[in-house]
Length: 243
Image (cartoon, rainbow, N blue to C red; front, side, top):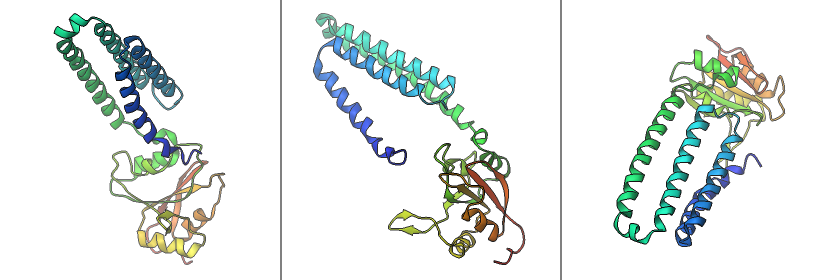
């Protein structure tokens, strides 16, 4: 279920447009306001359930939601006055929307700058080693399968500035990535890829010495960092050991 839930991502996009259309056709300010409040509560609850979100991100989201709800409440109140809507409604809508959009843009920019300074090093020793020792342009091969109880290793493998070249070490079968079942094809693929680092998953149920880890050593790599989920190997200098 955790693997296929990504296919549900387009659903909120369609739902947002549908709810916006429904709110427009309701023509009842109280119902529109109630709908906005419910959506704000739902978003806030979703953010609360993510333990990886820092307090600053939650505060920014709460401020943005509060501003949106306040603007919706004001707009709903003004819509009830026909004379006001006929004369000053459009201009007031622009006066409310412009500062709100500017404030949201500034908050988004601050959050982007904060994210650019983000590092994945605290999440796993292998990520920390890549951040500190792998210069941009390092060729990183991903192999094995990692436990789902933790951060996916794909993005951290690109390094703190996303400058590494990351590829999956495995055969492609009908546009599906598979794992090698034998040592020789794995070693050949590693040699063709000329990977400087191999980031190997230790299995959905982690094991200390999985076949990809043994094959990485057979291909001339040494382990430089490890956690319960992942093992990181660096290519030895000089000729590879005999296989």
